[in-house]
Image (cartoon, rainbow, N blue to C red; front, side, top):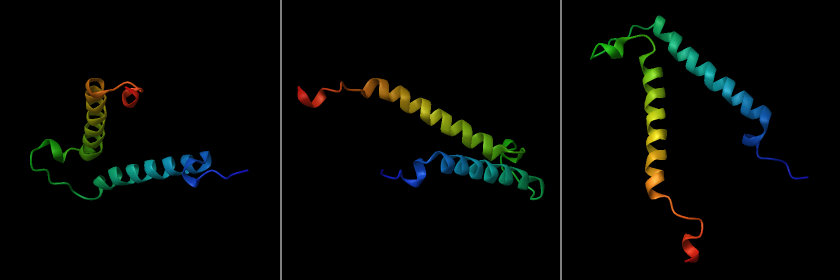
Length: 80
């Protein structure tokens, strides 16, 4: 039987998610030890870059879905 690539194996996917979450939590918690000097006021709040990055990513995903509605072609596009 053919072995799956390492990135698609469920135990490795779980390990990667845990690693990513640990890095995110660590970087947010480091803001308690390292003073952040924001330039605009809001960017000096605790965890700003984490929630700003999440919101920016979500907006890009939703925007691409909206653009996809207008640019979508049928599966048989090349057969016509």
